[in-house]
Image (cartoon, rainbow over all chains, first blue to last red; front, side, top):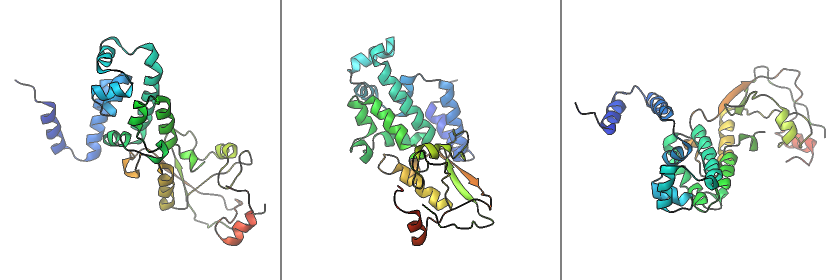
Amino acid sequence: MALATPRDVAEKLAAEAPDRAWLRALTDDLYRRLELDPLDRFTTVWNLSDSETARAFGVSRQAFSKWRREGVPAERARALADLDAATGILERRLERERIPAVVRRPAEMLGGRSLLELARAGEHAEVHRAVATMFDLRRVQP
Amino acid sequence: VTPLPVRLPDDGVWLRLAEPEWEDPLDPSFAAFQGGRWNAPGSYPALYLNGDVQTARLQIERMLAGSPVHPGDLDDSANVLVAATLPRSQRCGDTVTDPGLRALGAGFR
């Protein structure tokens, strides 16, 4: 018997789900089971293609393919750590399906750029700092 | 600075916005260290509260102003509201009326 496609299963579950919260709990649980590594988590949560991810680290797509096979080189570990920390904050604060739009949305506090554009410019630490700042409730209510 | 004293309503409930990770959302010591609109950094402990849900919502909008995040992007569990009551003996200053603000003087941010 052929296994149903993920899309078929998703459509069936969406039709049978009692409410949106139930579907969210399901996707959260499935997501946790995947135990994504930081690079996979970044590309998945930000909804990036391989070429977009390569640009976010300032490397060629060929170099990025090598990362996939052999791991992220040590000299890129800090950049990845910054993007992973930012991704973790975005996941805790935002509805997951909104994150791809948020990271592509230009903003005044980012100098008219988006978080993805900051990453492409090599400003990975700034991505982390900006994300931590934008959700810092203590700024408005100490 | 001598604030004009005001008496709290008997059944008043105030709301404190908090992050789920905060150990004690009603701890006023952070504001003592950092300062805020009504207390200078290093001055005294202060607990910043919202009078109603609408004011708390406005705080969220203020937090996100200029960022790429819209309030509707937030997860329902991103922040929590903690209800607080205050003892009748609590000393409070008027920060609403013009005479109250004049009594507080300049120097507040």
